[in-house]
Image (cartoon, rainbow over all chains, first blue to last red; front, side):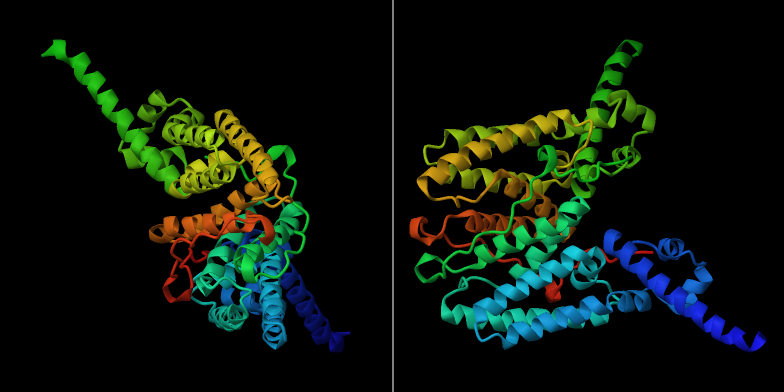
Length: 218
Length: 218
């Protein structure tokens, strides 16, 4: 029996790691990166010592928690740059970035905020914004993107997109899709050179005309 | 001298009331309605007892703090409905609502959230949204507004606008103006019937390509 102990320990450690990462995705996904480490430990049903043995810093935990989103973001950038139709590439990239942000408040935080330790995310962001800039130049030359669009406008809209995290979870993805479609309409060039307008995704129907955001406390 | 005491007391009370309202505008304006009453008392340099003598409930304080914004909102609605050009009225109303929201996070909170006690704000919101609905119908008939625009889309965008409160104070109004102009472009009808596109207000130039939103703690 004693010969099996190390394997059991390894298997326990693996289970703990999986549980911690699942908890981190849920906690940071819903509450953003300001959620404390102890909340992740609580949801994973592990003690703080176990949490810190697996992830000595919050940064280490965040990087691994959002590894999949970071891969998805890099692949969205690659696809967009490789798209033979730059306006289609630009639109798809805006849609995919919004979707990643809608699904996880924590990823949106890491992508957009000046989180001093999240250098990996800063690199992803720079890469994504450079791609948007490159696609914008190409698409402005075809006349389909407004000539006065600048990459800072996409940052502006991603800042605004974070406001949608205050909406109820059930409507968030619908809200984000409608928002992204309106963005693309806003960025589209003026009439004379524009491509035909596609239909918008479904509107969000707010219950009783207010979005039910968190009421203030205190 | 004793004969003057009541007047001094009245004058002190008036000073306190002014100081409390100034503090409330600053605190709720920057932090939103979730800021605690004790923070307002602290900034006004009055004790909690004095604060509660003037404003027995947070609701009473909020209603008086935002009396001016509520008047501005009602007058924006009146002007928009009276505008002989419905598309101009619609655009102006969107711009003025965004501006009110940009200047005060607390007013945006009161306008948009389901704050159970803020019935007065709920009435203003309903009035503003009814006006937007009425103007939308008129403007859709002239062909200048997208036929698939619904009033819920404006709520969506005001939810998103709240995300701009995470941007540094110095850029917030510029950010809000650019956002509102893009909104109007997004809501504008498809090419064949659209009015000419006006130039956008200046873009926000984010320092070092990230907006410097609050880094997470914990």
